[in-house]
Image (cartoon, rainbow, N blue to C red; front, side, top):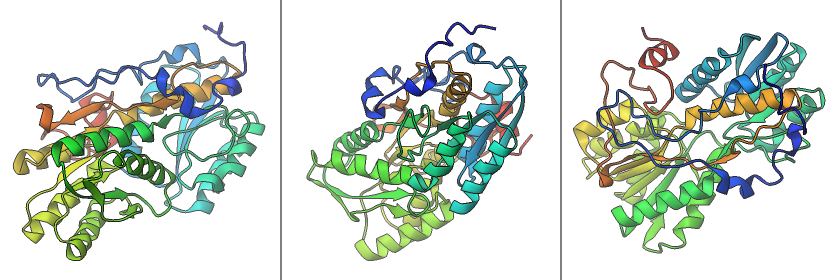
Length: 367
């Protein structure tokens, strides 16, 4: 087993996440239409976990604040990565079902079970810091994924794997300026108070300062619970209030099918859509509707990085993979990179994951 990197404690992996954006891998997405899946060419999830495989039998876990399709694919990616270590005996998944107290209880329970490495999505932000810090003090390698809980990196937790909200905001604003030019735009988020939605909104709002012809219809995140049905209802209400809106930004693009459904129900010209974390359903809808569309993707692969960082931290090892990640453009219809529709895969399959079609079917409950 290669343990030569076990020298400095993992707690020193970063001082300020924002300073690490420059360490990201290439963000050039693949446009090869012959590929079976729409996988980008970045190396974000491609590190070597064997450097961090523990010597002793070890339980690992993925703790999520609220379960959804994206979480199930991320869990499958984490399981696939963990399978490369013979000493990892269990991959435990917890779903707090949108309940803050349950999220805290789930984490405390994992520590009590002797789980040594935990990938956590702290969707309740700073409210989860006490339990995260307690897990760290207990010697658990715990790494926040996607949602930034705040706290002190290197003290409350050793490292994190976060999407770069400012880079994403800049990409969305630049694309909307080129595609829409002048008009109204709304930002659609997830559960009320979701830290990730707030960060992405702030990054986008800041980027819009360069483009005064693009006007937000709401100066805050518009909650949709990352649900397509609720997104349709919310957008229908926005249309009744504001009339046609020219564009939408979403931090969970898979459920943007609800946006298009709302416009079709209202008999309005379709808007431009941009965001992150798309799925097969979006491509199939686009083939019928043909609206301007751009997404930043490969987000489920970040779970692999987080697992490697958690295992490294649990063993006092260093991991120098990026902690703040710029997501590549996987889809950009204005540049000729169109989404795929693969009828043999479930509609909620993330075609930019590193899973095979068979693994995606299994992760989403289909064979």
